Length: 166
Image (cartoon, rainbow, N blue to C red; front, top):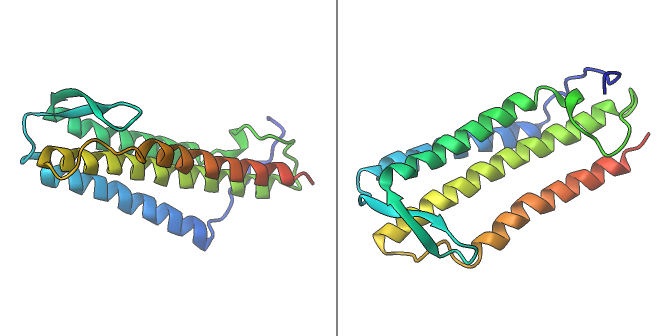
C-alpha cells in the first residue's frame, strides 16, 4: 500500500453528476424533515422490522437523527474519497493501473453516498406518510430495494476493478 502512487483522479461529468445529486439529496432530506417536523405527533415509528412494519416507537426528536446520520456518513465518505491510495483493492495496484483503480473506487464511493442519502430519505418520507395515515410501514419492497441499491453497484464496481489488472 505504501508504494501506491498518490494520484487524484479528475472528475468526469458522471462523477460530477453523481456528486451533485448526492448534495441535492442531502439538502432534500433536511428540507423534508424540517418542513414536516412541527406537524409530527409526539410519538412516531422509529424502527421497522425486515417486513417493513413499524415495531418500535419513540419521540419525534428521533426523526432528526436520520438526516444527521445521513449527513455524517455522506461527509465521512466524502473525506475518505480524497485518499484512494489508502483503499483496499482486489488486485495489485500498480503505477499503470492506479488511475483506473482510483477512478473506479472513488466513483463507487460517490454512488454509495448517494444511495445512503436516498435510503435515509425514503425512511423519512415513509415515516411521515405513516404518521399521516397514507402508508403503513416501509413496505415489503423496502428491504430488497435497499439490498439491491447497495450490493448490485458494489458487485459491479468490484468486478470492474478485478478486470483491470495491467
